[in-house]
Image 1 (cartoon, rainbow, N blue to C red):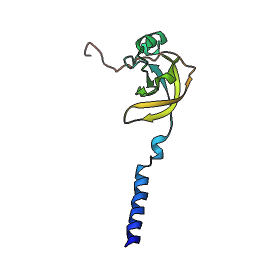
Image 2: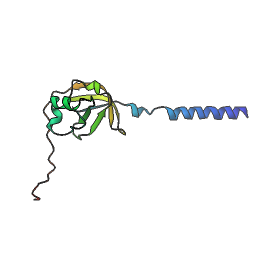
Image 3: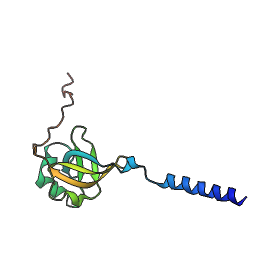
Image 4: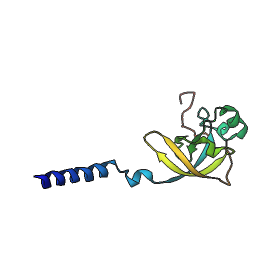
Length: 128
């Protein structure tokens, strides 16, 4: 009876440890490029204005607006992007898609610093 109980206990410990272990897919780094800006300034040329972003982000909170899909990632450790406000950068970090956040590990400024152009949605104001 003791052997059965010990075997059951050992099996429970192994299963519990496996469940508690982090999934390796969750800890993968991601590399994205985008614009470092203030959370309230996530579209148009103003997000590429270092002076504007520094003024608006006085609380120190920054976001990354990715190229292409314009996804806004809240930066967990905004101090890692200090000096890159309003810049087009390439960031490597640990994203949390469920929370919409990214922990920045490395940052590099990209050569292309032209402000992004607002997308035309094809709508006309005159209804035509």
